Length: 242
Image (cartoon, rainbow, N blue to C red):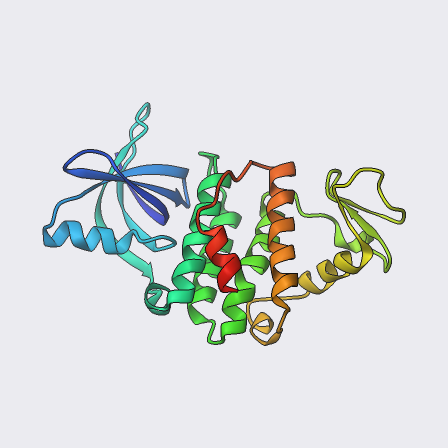
């Protein structure tokens, strides 16, 4: 039965000579695999353009129990992310975010709050108009996503001088005995990160070393508390670019 769904494209892989499979996150069914044509025709080219990494599109999806791959028709854009599709830095960020989401979004259950957060974040990335904002976006996105994944540390318990125990996901007044922790100077940055949004992050210049440390720590934290992210191919590019 065909259902009207809003989806976020995460990854496209070749299925056979005639079709590709789009891994997507949908508002009503969570993670889905969608079959689209892979030919050179106008319709196939349009579908490929609509399913670039982090593209938000709607369509009529044939949902049938027991099937792992679904067909889709009447595709149309929902968020017109013009700058994300043309700005080289934003393309790299979109690729990184889509790789990350492919790794961590494993559920096939609907999550309206998560879907709304993702669509708003994608629109925000398109609207960011400063290089600083684009560079800060992956860190802010991962921090905010951790809340929807249920793994974000409780920052209300943070006090100046605290350590962050990465293994247990809590702030401690004394240094943990294991190496998986953040020292107070690095932990203080989390308090700053917690106050950032997609508007004011455009004006916060960060040293490249701090940005890299924050990104690496967030990935480590995801690996400890959620789903192993595996080898994110765009991570070295993000690290070298920003």
